[in-house]
Image (spheres, rainbow, N blue to C red):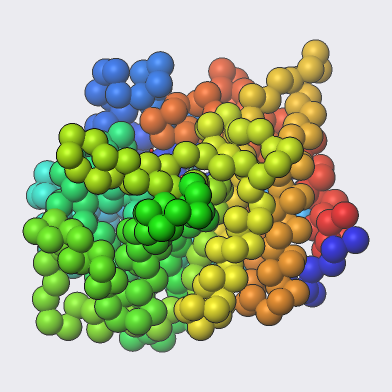
Length: 446
Ligand code: GBH
């Protein structure tokens, strides 16, 4: 039995656009994800989040299910355009009331709410003003954050500013496989800078408001290993790490962007003004760690340019998940130990970890997802090992509570420990939900 520290927080995570639905109800404004998914041939099978899991209407039932499983903390995100339909200015009180009621229901179930301000669904009205490319976005975000702190700050003890700024900046503004679907690497790096600046600004406002809780940021981590021992592969690996990890951890914890990276980027490097890095470097209360997979890295030349090449890496005995991602629980431990050793061992929550499978329900509709149980168990063992060697890890949020809208992949990959029938919106706990319930009850795993 691997026992966890007494106060370890066992949680589940979701995000607004992926579960809520009700995309145009009760005064909600349009977000860039509404726009993006309504564009034909953008998303797998032309699917969208118009209804998603219908969580907006089934919220009380969902919280009751969490309570039944013994969940101790719930990480959700707030839809900015539900609260501020135009992004700034007029408040939509019905939208704000929804989150108010959600928080009250969560607290009544003795679950600790962890609210993420931005999980990628920017109000379309702000995109029309340039989105995150526009430096004014920092002020827009500050206004929105103030509204949320003022309304929920008395009851929400855990806040996250941004979810995976890397993913939003690059998938949204460079690879264009996410909203807003813009393809420009230079804009993506500028977006990173504005996302980080707005994070710093929100943290500052949170401190000034004297709120009692903890505030942090959630980053996307992968473990990178060189494809071979060659000098070139090791250099490629370092470059990937700088681009995806140091790019965020250095400004947040050391007040600078990685030098190598900035010179590599040349004219694509973000424009930084005096004082920006001081704002970004505001001390945070915790670092949110999202980890799913490990990549093996090398250089490949394409058209005379040196490019990074990555391949999924699976530890021996593991296959790939439904996303095509490799499985490597040791990679999570490596990520945690790296943060412990090189960034001052901040308080950490694993804010996302989980796997997509081709879940097959039996004749009764039950899903015996033992593959997911194996994935979760071995990642939790890796976390346990990291805690044993002193990494300051206080909790774990399983992605995801419900099967949901997996962005460009639509509803095909199922990440939930609760199955959702997307025709009826019926919820059925899977084997993994019962396994997790037992882990929480015992505060440990086998
Ligand atoms: C998280 O991102 C998200 O926060 C969550 O909303 C999502 O549902 C969940 O994980 C499962 O995917 O454009 O080819 O370079 C996941 C981590 C990191 C996965 C970036 C995709 C880049 C793919 N993501 N990765 S690519």
